Amino acid sequence: MSKLTVQAMDTAAAMDEIINKLGPDAVILSTSKINGKVVMEAASGALPSQPQPHDKNEFSRILSDKMLSSPTKNAEKIETATTLPNIKEIQNLQKQLVQLQGMLDGLFITNLDGINQDLSSNSRVTLQKAGFSPKVLDDFKTSYLGENFHDGCNRFLSDLSAHLTHHDAVSLLAKKFIFILGKSGTGRTTMAGKLTAYLKETYPQKDIITAEMVTSGHRPNGQLQNFCRLLNSQAFTIGLDTSAADFNQVKSTEVMVVDIDLPVIQASKKLAEIITGVGKQNIGIILTVPASTSANMIEKTIGETKSLAPMVALTKLDECDLSAAELSSFATVNAKIGLFSASRSIVDAPLFATEGVLMQYLSENFDYKFEPRSSSKGLVV
Image 1 (tube, rainbow, N blue to C red):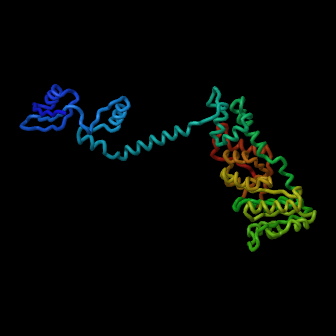
Image 2 (tube, rainbow, N blue to C red; image 1 turned 120 degrees about the vertical axis):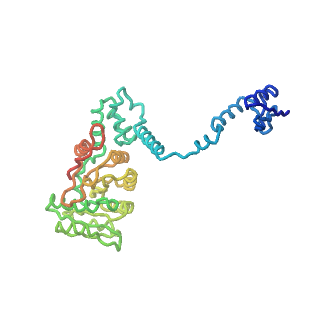
Image 3 (spheres, rainbow, N blue to C red; image 1 turned 180 degrees about the horizontal axis):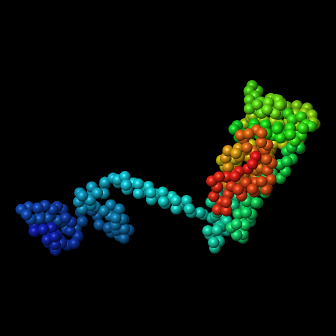
């Protein structure tokens, strides 16, 4: 490797002289200015620390590195590149991110059977946008496939209502024992009071007994006591250790409504024992589930009581609405809804579910664009 030092009037002239003498592969070692002239030192060939690319792949790598980190020519550009963005720039970036999120929210992934020539009026896309799960839309796709938008949505809601409704909810009134289970705060005790009042009015010739099943040492539920006091009756307490044979002592002219104040799993085990001793034909089981319960909680609670196949009582419908996601969860676990109830008043009787009642609720709470209405009519319970 040979070195060369040249002097010229300017940098361009010095570079030309170096290239003429050392060739285009020359490497500039230093540049200085002495007595008004540019003094440039150069060497022929590549330095050991700067190997030349020897193949196409190596050249691509070097080119990529240069593109990602191109050197700046002066300190002014370095200062500009490292300047932090101002508040306005950050606000503009946030606005663009919000707009991008809005566009992503409008995207839908659907199966091939959900596509037709008029996508803006597609039933499946609209139903999915409303919150119905893909599983339910697949299970009930025969309801809307081949139908226009209006008829497809109507048939879907009708078939879903038929699937969710208990086929004979009124048969509950013919049972000798009505057990009510559910998690704390689900309207279980209120349901016990409502059923007591309804049975007293419907069957005045029968003695309606209201009781609470608790673990030993547990204090009686004051709310249930107050309900019974309003109904001019008494609330009894049944221990968890009460045997199934003791229930057989209830007379044929008596009907017992039992509020089971136990965890759902524990209550399910006790009911299985009672069913064995009393007979399934004599027992009605209600599971209270409030509207607006999360999908995971619905699936968990129904799963804990699956062996009992309870009738679901939708409670607190005066406090919150029933969404498409919740209906999807009930349908997925094959829950059967038999009662609708409000929770703020003990006076109003529960409403027995029918396909028409549930269909009416869905029609009044969702328009044909399936956007929840601002003021839900709800159920009169």
